[in-house]
Amino acid sequence: MNRRQLLRSSGFGLLGSRVARAAVRRPGNSEASAPGAASKGLQLSEYQPKSMLQVPGTHVRTPRFPVVDIHTHLTWSKKVTNGVALAPEREILGTPEECLAVMDRKNIHSLINLTGGYGSGLAETVKKYDRAHSGRFITFTEPSYELFLQPDYPKLQAQAIEQAHRDGARGLKILKTLGLYLRDNITTGKLIKIDDPRFDPMWDACGQLNMPVGIHVSDPVAFFTPTDRFNERYEELSNHPDWSFYGKDFPSNAELLESRNRIIARHPKTRFIVLHVGNFAENLANVSENLDRFPNMTVDIAARIGELGRQPRTARSFFDKYQDRILFGTDATPHGDEFPQQLFNDRLYEIYYRFLETDDEYFDYAPANTPPQGRWQIYGVNLPESILRKVYNANATRELQITI
Ligand SMILES: [Zn+2]
Image 1: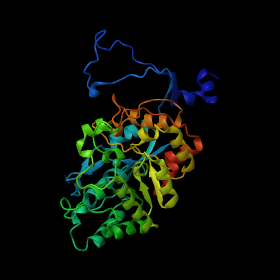
Image 2: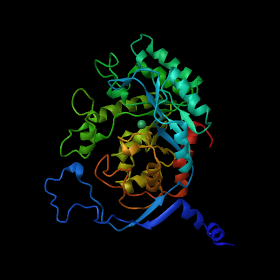
Image 3: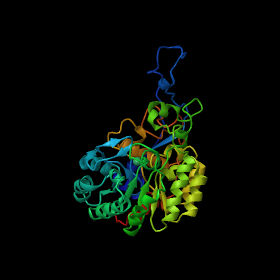
Image 4: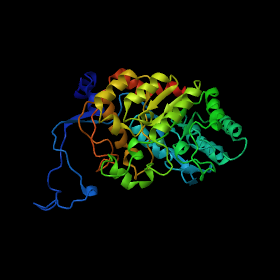
């Protein structure tokens, strides 16, 4: 038996290649500015403190089990007006080939492209991704809001879901358009409520066709408070002022969530994957309450490990209790450099794997020099294999009725 065989038979070969543990190296002072340089007047945007903690760090190159990422954006509407997608044509954000390279390196079996659109754009997307690379890509459809003013919109929209199903869509995605952008006259007028009855036939059609609804309503709760010195996401909101929903005619975060809950209650046969940890990762007690109330609700963790990882004990209990209802998702977007917490690349997935699989302390939740969502670090939740398997793929394959 040579050394390699010995390592493999003892399990160290696998550990050595998949996961590497090492003392974390911290950069020295060589890149610092001139000795004794005063920090007077340092801009917050220039402040990039390096942690001096000396704790073990783990590099998790590949996940314990193959991954189904329920939440990615590989295509996007070519026409968006005041936050409302208004054309079937799709812009390609990442080609199947460039996605597959990352998928193969990071053991990602399938990517779910939530923003597949509708009509001809959807059909083309399914052909280019799902049909050309069977099982590796799954596409969801989206509402045809440009039909919204037609008197028989409720019926037309339900029919559009049926057509999308025939064209190969496996679920419906609702962007935060509903509740925050769609208005009486589509892009102008009063905001439409999430539980507007005109959408009831659409929710029902999804139930009948067994298409889960991936729904994003509201946003981080800090986006609904003033962008001032007390706001924990001040820098993020300063970088993206249009993400603030404070003031104007916007409903509160609570109103949006209540409106969403009414549709989940009203359509018990329709399954809702409530994205971004039920859109209230800051309050897992609230998400738990909703999961207890609604058997037709599951959640994903996309773009919220920054929230989960700064409350690791509460998050770990949440994973333990709802281990059958939490799906792996990232919100990954190829070339989305503006949002490092969503940038589709190897490093992003490695951070998710590290968060789920290790008990590492105080590490970055996004591949960026400055934490993009808020100035904090995260801790791993160190899930056991039985839960990892469910979160990485088993819960998603059950919801999507696929095998991998
Ligand atoms: Zn998303």
